[in-house]
Image (tube, rainbow, N blue to C red; front, top):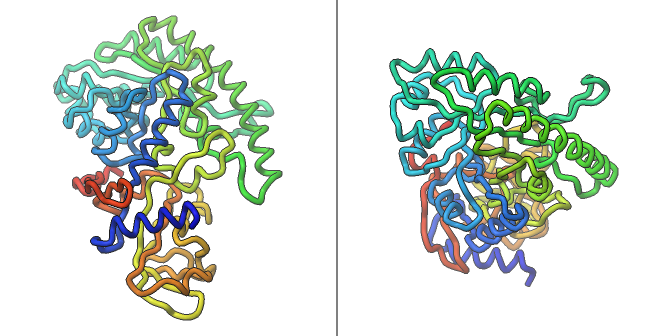
Length: 400
């Protein structure tokens, strides 16, 4: 029996008393992945990205482990909810236009002390001030440095379109504006290098593309390390008591941690290890989060149909955004139908061994987005479900 077949047997036994569709997290794999992130961070604290987990119980579990410190959230409403729930260090990774949220933040000392908001434009400070509605709490602020690699005088850009602050001088200018503005306190810098941390460099069957990605990422790491260090110097000249400099992501933990200017690492997807993280030379994780769909039809030889399953991930549309049939091994989508909204045909010799009511286990393309489809995660230890915990959705929250 292969290791994957053994996992399938365990998961089937653990969830035999439950009806599919359902989602699980294998705690042994989750904990091993967490330990690997800490190891790669080389002594620098890891801030866990909540959008890649979307389950309070698992956020609490990982933050109780040595080496993790703080949450990186994705909306202001989520940040306030986490702060009210007892999370004391929440960095909002994206700017917000949530006026009601800012009114609450600036009028309540508890979330004001726990939440740090992201800014890359003076207009965002203006919006916060306009939303205060009498609130006088000081707002903790983090500035985001754009990490994209610009070539040929800026005519070629590699990386996500995030912050407009690309140069150290521009970041320093905004730092001085924040430092001189009443009602705000600059406490941190963030720089997320998605083109390094979030792009696989060992894509199966594509050796030339993989080599090109590795060359690009090597050049991008060198350029960013130098520019990030200069940006931190610029900001510290205006704000010497800066609390943190955040960088990285699951795919670049050890590289970012090696930069002296960086004080903490962000990571989250590496806890669940979705399918998009199969193509990396820098680390090997264990798939920890899976979902099961029941077989409801056997339309012919070498074919079964499962209920639902059409859970594409965000990003540029493509086959790599689809969940992947994982257990049993040897199943694939019908190219004419793909992953369907209410039913998904699967083809392959393994289909002939599946009966009505059996389950097929899938891995989502991305991490936390799985939790937008399920209201609970069944936590598996060995071949037993030891707890069932709500996702954000299960607690009544869909923040985006």
